[in-house]
Length: 303
Image (cartoon, rainbow, N blue to C red; front, side, top):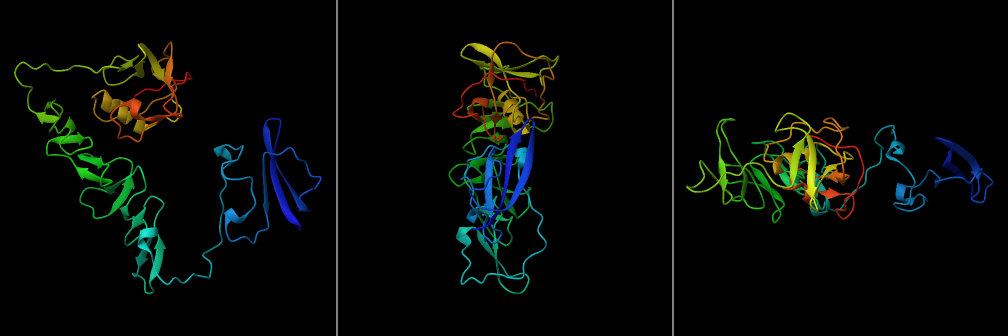
């Protein structure tokens, strides 16, 4: 059967795209290719088109495909029922009953595609903003809420807690009226002062900021196996910075900085491809490469 064949092959430092039309599979077209696809054009699903197999590729994201479609088609499918438990919602606002598809961010939804009622794994049902009646699914929660692993919803922390972890009464940061309003954590509760005879902890162990004349910014260094080392900036973003600032007890992150902003470190580079969701309590709880392995790559990250 005649098909239209198009492939991408590597020559020198450039990708070149060639097309061979009306060729059969044993054609004499060049065979120095990475990715080979065959399209007839009449398939009803992309997955119906022959290709090398899911995940079998040699591409970079600079080659991600996209399309521009002409307009909505004239044909609609009729359904005997609309199964809301399978990622659909019933929309009767505009005349005929319509069975809509929930957003990819929702497991189930109600009323519209973005108003989630339950969430995919590792995300939590979260009000879009305080006082709003609509919900989305997010990997982290608003201030004064915590991601409840049992209900998979963002639940309110106890009064006085600015942040809490796992349970509403397990405070990890305290509510303060202003910068001069100091609060203290004692047995996971927020108190106005430490009990008599107790000590006030200053600083934290295992993580530090260096390279700046400031206690709130600098190059991030981690203590691992008794040796201080840096963190590579691959994939580093504000979610990673939030976890670092939380661990340092320095409030929320204002910025994530890369490219050796505070000078290059020395010795080991302990962490690469850090991918925190923003809710972790410790940088070592975040995903980094595969299996939380440590790598020595550069450059370095800063907050």
